Image (cartoon, rainbow, N blue to C red):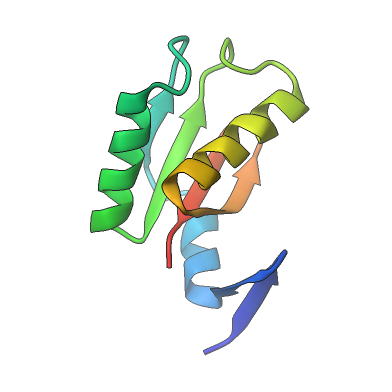
Length: 96
């Protein structure tokens, strides 16, 4: 199994390919309500039942690149997951 290293975590190649696939459907949207406790609970629930969760941040949530990355980092921290793929306002989370 080939492994790709992202920062300090090692991500299997199959996980990276699945994360980049256009076939992976967005399952969570973060809207104008922001990162509520219910959004975090839903992310945790989905990561418990599937390896990858695709999250989309609506435009009004975070307009600037650094704000988006901050929101994604907060989701990672609170859900004990890793963003293995981020493009624009979409992130794919993975929990080992």
